[in-house]
Image (cartoon, rainbow, N blue to C red; front, side, top):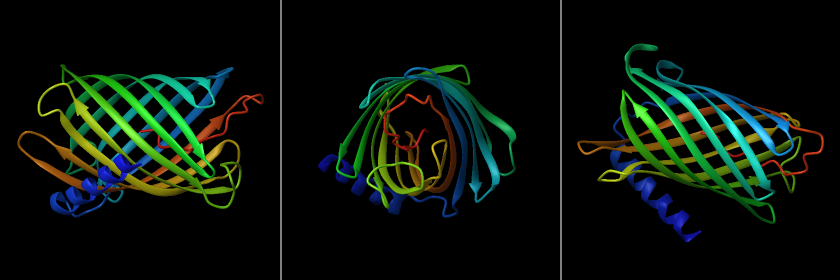
Length: 236
């Protein structure tokens, strides 16, 4: 917990000092999960990002993968996707980067009364404009149901977390992503979530942060014998 609050303080300081674009952008996300066999869940996502609020779209991605639920507290995932970046003056105009990525991740969840804790460890292998790069990510996330003791149909919840991005080459630090928001579990298969995301990017020649407003819609189609509690964490 102390580590999380230390990261939070650093993130907010970086945001205050390095906010190089005062306009808010937007992330629009739709994803779906389908449990095609006991404890095996297929996943697919579409995402588009804009430099201003729902205008000047500069990025979109398509990705998917498979989760295996080892038990109620441990999950393994393997996925892949295609990521396209464009110049920011117009909507999806003049592509500047294409990335092909695969990744492996391991998620540990814990509960303390209403508090739901998530630790996510991810290793990514990316081919960016034909150049290879490794990336390593760690995310700590807290989900708290508001009107019920656990996340079930008709439950409001809040979510706060931070994610650190590292690479295998100096200076190693790439990015920090802080997020806070709330959501609503409509029923057993529909989750709505809106989140503030502050993303600080660093390179050898520059660094800066930007705020985004994220809107996410998640569809879940689980087997009737699935008894694991749903933890509505961010998928990105």
